[in-house]
Length: 246
Ligand code: FPP
Image (cartoon, rainbow, N blue to C red; front, side, top):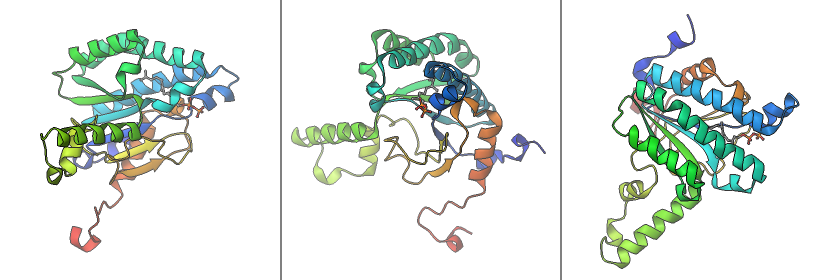
């Protein structure tokens, strides 16, 4: 049986998030410039979006650029932004044909004007698509997101819009960038690193974590299927006992 056929479609994670890591090392191993690693990484993005939509995953979130990534060499940052614009222009047709809605989370106003414009345009054009939601985390940092939530809530308390007592998990969820998305069920990180790197700290509270040594440009459909099979073999207890679940 192929890997794809081993996936139980009624036990799919509702939300898969991916830390796409290893583009630089992939390029270095081949004696290439880091930017070529990112270009190759963009091909994996296409492959994984396609595989996720085919298999029926409803929400896919990709960590494309962190708030910390602005500290990278200027040329690399510029190339990543150009790659974003190029990919958006190229893939809008595929998103429409496959009924995929695009969202973005993060400090989007920090993006170069062109990237921000292109992004807003694709988000708007795909806003009524229903098969899958693809979210790009861009200039995203989870701590920044949490600080933003605290500021918005304290402001609302100060102006008597809400009371302190009314603050609960659902209000916090509503103020996160991810307010339109369910909690993450499966978080994948490629390249052998085993850390979260300021990604969706609140949203992964009960996510299953999956780490693989494969570098992002080498991560293809079968690798996603492998991660999904691994996920389906786990028991998610959400604090309960095994016996309670059965
Ligand atoms: C991490 O690899 C990757 C990134 C910081 C950027 C991810 C970007 C892409 C996959 C390109 C295209 C994305 C879109 C949405 C079109 P790294 O550079 O940190 O690798 P390293 O740890 O080996 O140096």
